[in-house]
Length: 225
Image (cartoon, rainbow, N blue to C red; front, side, top):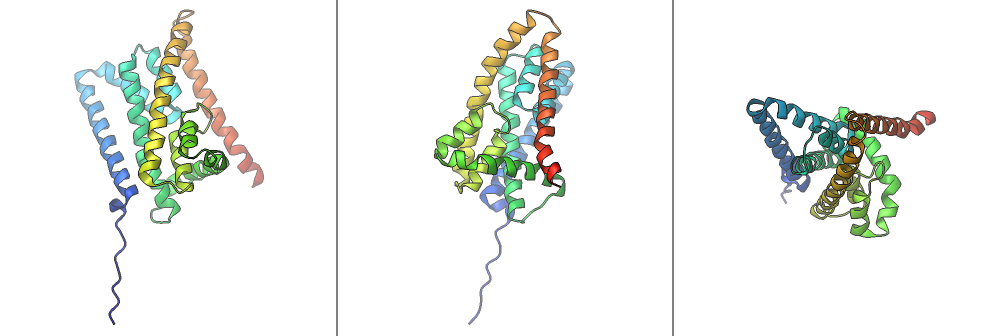
């Protein structure tokens, strides 16, 4: 008898691998668009890079307030936030799964994935009670550590199929972005009526809140060690 050892499936051939490839293509396309804008409209490109960096570092709410504070409209702020959050899910979710399965471990992302997993474990049972509707609402609600990346990890821990998980997470994310957009635009207009500097102060306060949230999230782990 001859034993036929089936070769392991390449990472990029798996569902998570295809998501990662799609995320990389979207990220490259978006970067190329920013690069083109840098030549066509240098001043606008700086603002676009600013809202992109703010979204990546401090989340959608801070990015939106920043965008509205520099006189961007819904037609610019909403698509950019959608692209940023989509890229984050399509890249970080597959990398988390690869790390979980010990197929590909990136040491620099280990702390991020550990925090994400802890947040997902805390909320997993709450989401399980309501199934996919619970996952949608979890991503949609504007609470701390209820974003799309954590939501996608919860879906993975609950055993949802990859495409169902990502579809629910991205749908909840897009609805959340539209809700945030109209709320924050109204807030921006009210705050701006008091002072031209008030909106930038709001951005700074949101950044401080995000940093404070990260520090508080790390305290229990440090106290145990």
